[in-house]
Image (cartoon, rainbow, N blue to C red; front, side, top):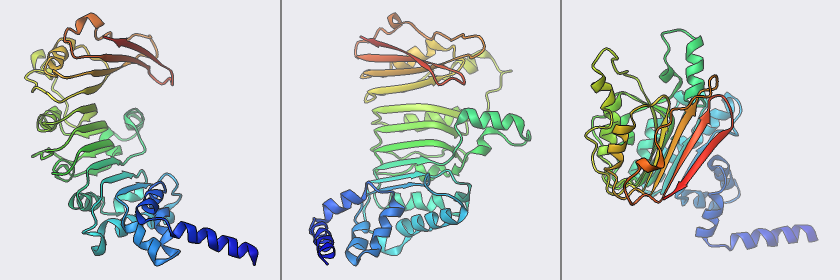
Amino acid sequence: MAKDTKLKAMVDRISELPDELLSHILSFLPLNFAYTTGLISKRWKTLCKLMIDLHFDDKLVKGEEEFQRFGRCVDKVMLSPDMNNQPIRGFHLNCCHPELLLFDYDQWIEAAKLRGVQDLQLQLSVFPFKTAYEMSKWESRTKSMEDKFISVAPNNIFSCRTLVILKLERLCVAGNILSVHLPLLKTLHLKSVYLQNSDNLKKLISKSLVLEDLYVMVGYKERLDVKRPNEKILSYFKDSLVFRNLIQLDLVFEFFYGWDDLKDMLQNCPNLEVLLIHEEVCKCTGNVCIIFEPTHLDFYTLLYFVIIFLETDYPQASRHSYRM
């Protein structure tokens, strides 16, 4: 009896906490677990509806049946009529299960936009670039690397008037980017993302007028025709727009030799303070393409930059840091 009374008192103390604090506590739980607290009482069910940061992660989901429950939970949170007017700040979807294709995940993203999302982060494949490439070499030639990635509609993710942070990882953008409307976007990370071609990347970056933080590691479904003049291939960075707000820039290279053009692009980043360059080392030969020396950087706003040499198929990485 005494134990039951003590437990009841503990529950009562938790219930006396304000809604804002309880909602903050719930935000640290995987959302599908947080929503099960609605079984405790009607108040807890209401609290879940007040959460403004929605993080869905299927890493603890095992088996098709459990994933079906996970998907139905996302459906309920994002598509229920009683949730339409509930504003949210963040929508993170880390979902690598193949059963995702059975759900309308594009509608989840659209619902987040309608609810005023500011922070959108998507990771929709279990395979990084290198793993997808190795798998594609051993499978049918009709299957390309991008077939390993879930596709999302470009108009669904590149048109949002409230978005401040957009981080995409391990996914494929279906088709050409016809229009971009991201007036508030300050952070753009594209990591292991497939685009139609390089023009799509240029359009996306050029239309992000207040960008401050940029990370790019992309592949293209359309390849450059190597039979064309070299000027066509080496002009990727030419005619770059001026990025007056860009503060940090991350670049990932593999077999890159166009430093002169890249340096021209960096000159169009007058407020750049942090530059990170990732360069791959060949496992067999140990060779690395030395892109630049610190003396090549002759603009004065740069405070700090790092060269990271990554060894192919090795976990080790060599980091060279410079302060200006």
